[in-house]
Image (tube, helix red, strand yellow):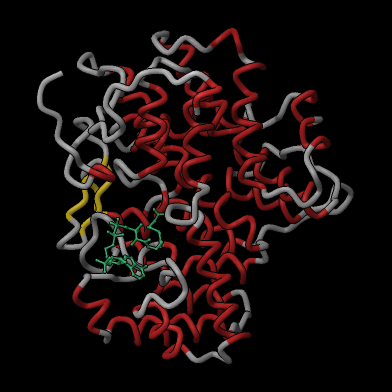
Length: 394
Ligand code: CMC
């Protein structure tokens, strides 16, 4: 058995080598395949960034057109899969609906699941990228009791998603380009973040040679937790609580958090395992929050509460000593709300963004000849050997 080292939460243990994403947590640097996140957020598109993450290089014009065409041809859901949505309760949270539907994809595409068959992996990659927005839109439609819309493949990925989410079957839906662009940028910011909880889950499940759909479905469930992707929903609920219960008083809320008054309650959207400096994604989201809200013609007191809360926390010793800064989830919720998404959909939007990262990592893992099945060790702290006690003697 040898000597085993305990590293709770893998704070200091690398699980793999990776060429995909670079983070310098002290300097607040994030790069996908070497390209700085601010550059990509400003100049790239979500589709192009997805290509970059998965294939390692920025695509040529032809490569991007081909990638985009392939995805357009796979956006439909099988009619039998569509029926799944009828079985969930109306008030179901869309995240487990999403993971269930993605898990079910491996029952519909049993012809192309072999993780070592290049063509099969390509097909699964395209199917996932194409179908997740449709699944997400249907999860939304189900929750509000509205009819599903078939994808319109003359539209781009984000426009198509917005139309399927907010449109109605017999009515034309004009996609506001500013709205689509803002969402596209947010998806870029979420597209990868090296070995976070959900991506590590995708790799761990995939290391058993489970197929891509099964692995990504597991990743979606990991993302659902409030300490990970679920934080964007939790932030908005926290801001609403401050508005209603504390009358907008951020000071008393910060005091309660730092005195750990409400058992385990944290300042949601703050802190990060790797960033001990301002999260570069949060910087971009914060800058665009004002801009997007004014473009959409929305004023939201929750944005003011968020800004006041940030200012208060950043000036407080508790947060300074622990190097706690706003993370990507802190301001996104306010933007999603202005866009008209219900709070329950926020983590689904994170999943749409993170999908290319999960796929890129799964492919890197499966193609790496040094990959072994993920199988952590433990430090056993239970009883030493005991003799079985018959029922009558206990
Ligand atoms: N509010 C108050 N205190 C905090 C917070 C917070 N948000 N985050 C960390 N701390 C404290 C924590 O109580 C501990 O203090 P002490 O040493 O007195 O016990 C210290 O800071 C170190 O915390 P930790 O739990 O050891 O840090 P970690 O690296 O294990 O956790 C984290 C990272 C992101 C889970 C955590 O900061 C957190 O729970 N944040 C709130 C949830 C959140 O916003 N999650 C989104 C993360 S970014 C995007 C994503 O992955 O989705």
